[in-house]
Structure formats: C-alpha cells, structure tokens
Length: 337
Ligand SMILES: NC(=O)c1ccc[n+]([C@@H]2O[C@H](COP(=O)([O-])OP(=O)(O)OC[C@H]3O[C@@H](n4cnc5c(N)ncnc54)[C@H](O)[C@@H]3O)[C@@H](O)[C@H]2O)c1
Image (cartoon, rainbow, N blue to C red; front, side, top):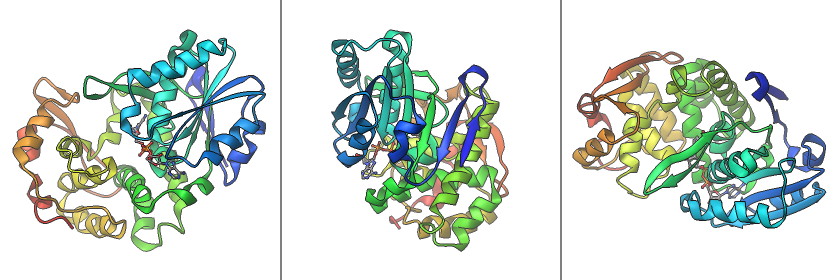
C-alpha cells in the first residue's frame, strides 16, 4: 500500500509493505552514491540489504542511543560524504529508529544545502511517527532537538518484517505514540487496542497511525496549529522524562496522557496501557516536573497550549499554566505499575 503525503513540491510516498526493504533498489533511486546511516543496535543485515541495492554504497554505523544526535556525529556523516566526494545529486538513507532518522535527515538537509533523503524506519516509534513529517534534529547543550530543520524525505519504506528483531519494550514504547494518535483522532484505532492482540494487528495499527500523522502534517507542516495535537501527553511526559528515571520516551508519554483525559476516557485508557505493558503510575517529585515544564520550549508567555481528550477520537486545545497542569498529576502518582 502507498500513502501519499501531499505537500506540493515536497510531496512523497510512504510505502507500507512487508519485505519492502528487499525492494529498496526498485523503490528508491540508489543508482548513485548512497550514504546508509544505521546504528550498532540495529541488526547489520538491514543496512547491508540496502547497500546491495545501491550502485555505490557507504555504510556508516554510529553508536546506538540518543547521544548520537550530536554535532560530533553529524560531523562524522558530513565528513564521510565530503571525503567520498558526494555531490548534490547523491543521497542519504536512514536505516534505524528515530535517532538515525532525525540525525541523518538533518545531515541530508545541510550537506550542500540539501541532498535526497530516504527513510527506512526500523522501530515501531519511527514507523508510526518520526519517519514522516520532516522534522530532523540533533540535541545541543543538553536540550533535545533544538538544532534542526524541516526537511522532508523523498520516500519512506515501512517494512514491518524488520520489527521481528525489536525488543518487546521498544514495541510498547512506539505503540504509546499510536495510542496517543488514536485518542485525539481515531476511535476505531483505539478500539483495536482495546479488543485485539496488538501484535496481530500491528500492520493495521501502523497504517492507521500513519494516516493520522499524514493528515495532520498535510494540514500544518511547520507546527503552527493542528500539529500540536501530536504533542498530546508530551508536556507532562517531557517533564517526567527530564527526571531521568530510566523510562523510555513512549513510557513517559503514556504517563503524560493519563492526566489529560476526562474520567471516562481514563477508565478506558489505563487498561489499554496496562495491556501494552506501559506504566500507568509512578512515584516522582512533581516540583521537579513542574520546573522542567516551565522550561519546556512549548511554553509561550507563561502559558502552555495543552491538548485534552474528553471523548475518544476528539480533542480540545486550551492555554494552561504549568501549575494548572501539574495539579492534575495526582491520578498517576503512586507505586509504579
Ligand atoms: N522527527 C520526529 O518527528 C520525531 C518524532 C518522535 C520522536 N523522534 C525522535 O525519535 C528518537 C527515538 O526514536 P526510537 O524510539 O526509534 O529510538 P532509537 O532510534 O534509539 O531506537 C531504539 C533502539 O532500538 C534499536 N533498534 C532499532 N531498530 C531495531 C530493530 N529492527 N531490531 C532491533 N533493534 C533495533 C536501536 O539500535 C536502539 O537501540 C528520539 O530521538 C526522538 O526525539 C522524532
């Protein structure tokens, strides 16, 4: 199946097909120099499969983890392209999760003012969310994603076969973002989580999530309005993440969504999160979360544009102070579940 993300001259196709990584040579234009970026936690075979399809491949493997979204690693990618005499007509392919996508997309955006970029996401999080929409970034001076660019890929290949090697906790981590999208935008998707076995429905979950994100990005490419719904659960979630308690991003978002729902939605959300092995309670110091939230870049003039879900499949945006939001966290405080 192919979804088209229509952004005028920046439009591109998202190919959703099991085994599509094996067809990279057919689906992407790799008849040129190709920088294939991956990390050392991603099984090597995926990057090698893409390399075999390229006329002139160069695989670069960075260390797994968020620390690779740095100037240092960016420089490694750019140096490699320069030393191999990449021109503006050559290309970059990301083969990895959101870290690799964000890093290599940014490298592609700045090398010679932009070379073609393809994304082959290999985690659930990157397949449902980060591989489309064109946000690329590295972290700078301890602040996440504060140096980057909006730079759309030329094509995205979603191959759910590559998820067979992904640890269960990473699967749940990514599905938290899919639950987020279902709550604001798609009641049927939420019911899929409620009723079925999520691994049996993974292809449909990914497709439905991509449709939601695609529609949101098409309406608001540069995050001036509607795209903020993708931040649902993220304000409190980021605050919890900043406590560095060893939780994954999606786990923090799971916790962050619970206080932003009406009682009736929360009653349905908590069992879904439990089914996904995501946390629904945590012991933490809300004053530290509050101070992190007041430094959040989404805070403007003392107010935060917060997203609430009162009914599944719809949302409400309201300006709130960090204090008003933190007053809601009682529902997630307690022993970790
Ligand atoms: N650009 C966006 O719109 C956007 C949206 C959300 C998140 N993000 C970014 O995404 C990043 C998080 O992405 P992530 O959750 O994919 O994390 P990640 O890229 O760190 O991947 C998680 C781990 O899984 C391993 N891995 C990847 N694919 C694998 C596979 N198929 N089998 C086995 N192991 C595999 C990686 O080596 C890594 O250790 C963050 O930096 C976040 O800021 C970006």
